[in-house]
Each structure stands twice: as C-alpha cells, then as structure tokens.
Image 1: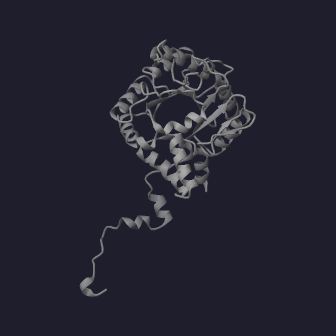
Image 2 (image 1 turned 90 degrees about the vertical axis):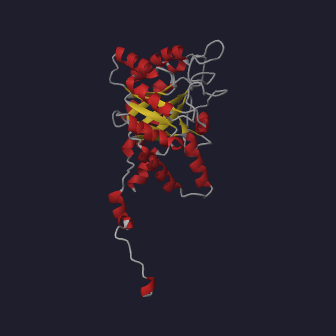
Image 3 (image 1 turned 30 degrees about the horizontal axis):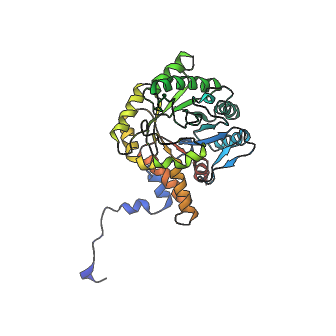
Length: 331
C-alpha cells in the first residue's frame, strides 16, 4: 500500500473481543443453562411402548415406563423441570378424566414425583382440551360456546387433583378470565399453598401449535380464538400478564416464543416475577424439517434459537430440545 492510500485504522475495535473462543465466552451477555430449561413430555394412556409423533421427529407419546426413563435422564442432565401432558383413552364432554385421581395425567404426576423427587420441578398442564371430546379448553354451553365461569370451577377441581398427586407447579393454560385467582384460592383453601402456579398468561391463537394437536390426539374442530389472544396484539399480552400477577401467579408465560419475542421483552420489562416462554411444537418442527433437508446446521440453530429466547428476557424456556440442549452445553 502506498503512502497516498494509507488508511488510518480505528482506535475502538469491537472485534478484539471476538478474536478467540475464550474471549467470546468471557464477554457473552446471554447464557443458556440446563436449569433454565423445562422439557414438555406427553404420556398416553394404554401404551406399552413409546409412540413417535410424526410431525415432531424425535418426540414421542410416552408409556409410563418410558416416561420414568425420560424424567430420570432430565434430572441427570440438570434440567429445571418437566411439564407433563396426559392423553386419555376415553374423552367426554366435561373432561372428567382430568379430575379422576386414577386418570392418566394424575398417575403420571405421581410416577414422575416418585422417580425424581425434588431433583426436578414437576409441572403439569392444567387444561381440559386433552380430555374433552370436543377438544376445547373449557366446558361448553348448550349452544357450543366456551363457558368461562363453569370452566373455572372445573379448573379448581383439576388443580386439587394434581396437587393431591404431588405436583410442584400447575400450569393453567386455557386462557379463561380469572383462572389464576380461582386455582390459587382452591389450592390455598385445601392446604396446598406450597404448590406454585405457572400461568400461561399471553397465549396466542397461533398456527405454530399444529404439531401439538397430533401430539395430544386433539379432538378440536374449529379454533380457540374466543379465548386465546389475537396474534396482532402485544399490549393485550402485557395486560393479561399483569392480571395474572395480581391474581397470584408465581411465573408468567408467553406462548409461542419465536413469533412473540417482542412480547417476551415487554413482559420482562413489566413484571417482577420470573418470565417463561414456550418454544412450541411448530417452532420445533420447522427447524427439524429444515435440518433434515440439509438447509441449516441443526445443533447450531437449536442453540441460537434458545439463546434468542433468553436474550429477549425469558428466565425459563419450555422446549422439546431441553435434554439435547443440556447435553450440547456439556460438550
């Protein structure tokens, strides 16, 4: 380079801190750790062996035995918890299997608690949709509308059944108005004040729930737009979160995660309780499909996805990659 074309280099060089892996690790602003990850698990009544879910490669509907093995591994990997979903053999209009102490979900809670004790936070989905023959998250009026207040009474019973089974944390996910207050009051009145509430507070009527419908053998016809939130609304999400905090939620959640990272950030800035985000089935499926076609680096994309959710403000991430991510973090 001649003297005439010499360029004076900058004094401030951000690239210095990117020069080596050690430097990059040292100054990283966001960290994914196993204890911040929760593994959602599905248990299906009557299975002798785990059943693959075709739209979610690598995810299965568990038998009781395979669920025990999965949660034991989750505990060994240092995960924060597991969220248990139950799939009954028989459904009815009121979702009575959700309240039955011998129902698939309540038995699974007891199995998991017996297997891992306090090594994991044992969480359970508190919603009727897996148990109703119409597939809605609540009880229906004679004209087919979801009856908010009758549903609340069912949620209170469901919470008591799950607490009796030994759950650490219930996850009311039906987006009924007042659900957190009713669940909290029922638990406290029955002597279960130690049971925490993870509120599905900002849960959107999302296209990204598609593979989950297969995972839980959903009976739904139609949609849930009269109770789940409009994807266009962010302020409404914050409002729902603030209502749940006022009603006694211990943790609030945004679901899905990736299309709503802006909502995660707004919620994190608005509350002083832990914030969770659910990296849902459709987010999982589209990354897995792209990786299967060789279009992206699968493991790098998984960790980048989880890091983005943490960076947006989530303290806790529910993700089907939880166990795999924990193993990658150990490598």
